[in-house]
Amino acid sequence: MATITPQDTCDHFIGSGALSYSWWRVSRSHGTDTVDAPDDWSVTVREYDPDMDTVGDKAIVFDHKALSRAVNTLARTAKDKRPEYLGEHVLRECRTFVADPENADFDAAMADEVLQYIAFGKVIYG
Image (cartoon, rainbow, N blue to C red; front, side, top):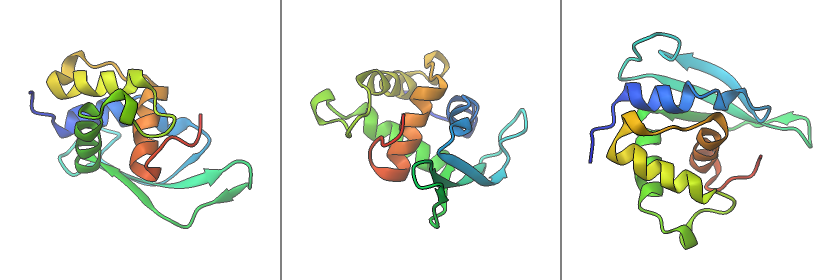
């Protein structure tokens, strides 16, 4: 098992473009717009519900700790126990990421599923 660095989580998840989906509203970002992400990088978002045209009250924070925890949990999740609507390919990529972050390849859609898992416990948009 490889060591997952803050740079790895920032690059693969925030750098993927996942936060450009319409259901995320970034309210604060720290350290994600530099080449070398600091250990304490973070992004605070609010959920935008396109059906209701409303922005949620709850602040959702994505950071290295939250992403590391989620990816490690998903990497150990059996495909028949995966969270609702989370793709099996996301579990497979999480396993790759935990073993060797350099060889993982999250596109925006896959990274977004992991972010939704952190925020909601399942995938609700997509």
